[in-house]
Length: 332
Image 1 (cartoon, helix red, strand yellow):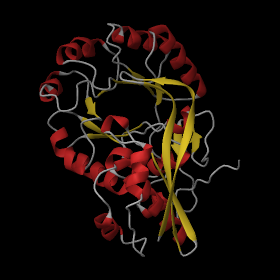
Image 2 (cartoon, one colour; image 1 turned 120 degrees about the vertical axis):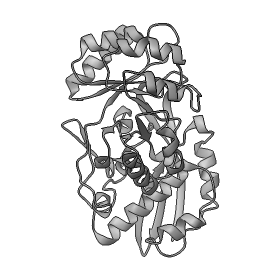
Image 3 (cartoon, one colour; image 1 turned 135 degrees about the vertical axis):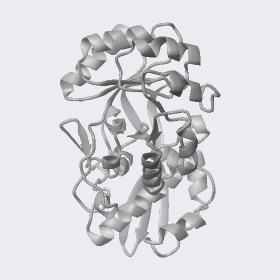
Image 4 (spheres, rainbow, N blue to C red; image 1 turned 60 degrees about the vertical axis):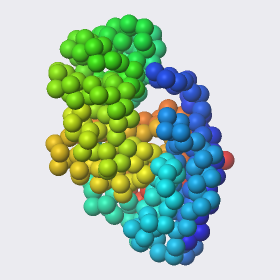
């Protein structure tokens, strides 16, 4: 099999702000794997928090050897270098896209899954409480059925942010603190918030995690604490659920295993994303039916999606019922 990769910049419609950073654009790496005249595509959305970048992904991909059999996923996995989870996810997605095209089936059918998953949440990025409320109101008017609020402003206004959004919107809310609360802060504000769950309130690895799980009146989900299958069991000690991202797990295959392990441990399962094009979002959409909560809005945050094909219908990111991932590069 032949592998090619290129770095691509995608542009956000508006500046996206979370507790630790703001961005107007994102660099992703798009991968093409060709076998027998058929090409599968995948996308890497590297996460700087884990010291990955588009450049490091490209460097890693230069050392990848895939062999000659696109169905030999165990053998291919054994050949891959260590590290670079986002780049690994791009290769994984490209192989699934290739497999689907070779047999004329969408990826969700290759996985034995349903096409339709839960509605995706819309992310209301961190800002002033009144501005977040206005943006939440607009998102609900657009048809989003769930909202995820970015918190962790360290300005004493997080509770007011939730209150103002709650007053402006009637849809279910969840919050993502991106590691920016202490145990005392979490135990103070969580009982006062009308939310479904709180994502990663404490720093990853915090020794206070188990106590927060025990004392919180709101379910706790972890993101930065949970990367691959090897992390899931430990997360059961500190959380009620996990946020799976393909850019952390290394791809669809590992993510499916993580979801199964979480179910066995009575953990909830959320599927998240980064800022990415429809190529990256499609890989998640094909496995979304495994999850309780879905946050696949990365391509919806862009000025324009260079890889259309995922349909946003009735609040759901619906994968195409077409071979492979079902997305194609837009004409330029």
